[in-house]
Length: 158
Image (tube, rainbow, N blue to C red; front, side):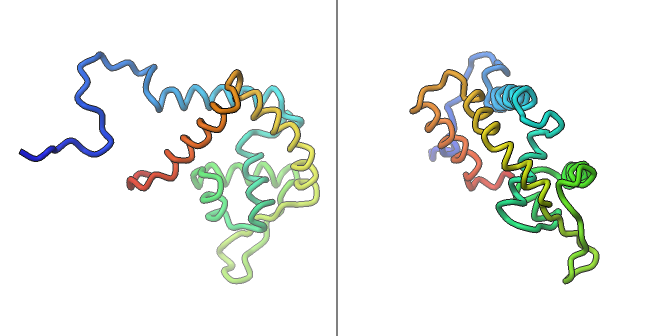
């Protein structure tokens, strides 16, 4: 009889299911911890971690449509729309119509946004350091490697 166990799956486990030991729960708790550290340590207390990521995406990719920002930041359309509006209200980004498609809006980092981003980089490094907590150098490399491997796995899930 052929083996029908999917590759990389654990054998049937009869132990009780403990949600606190599941990857999703642990990732969520780690993210909550990181977000709390970000809010405590950010040089600009009005800037959220996802707003920071959005500014970084604009710095790295240049002027971008909201669809491009969704791809670069891994947030949904409704969320990116709100983020862009809040960044625009603070004059950290500007919006302009796409010359190739007037239905699209292009988001561009302003000089104020770039200056805030430059000021935030040392804080962001400290936030990452604090988020890693007591992990030693090898554990830090390992966790980043494993998270990238999980994200990049080609299993059809997105």
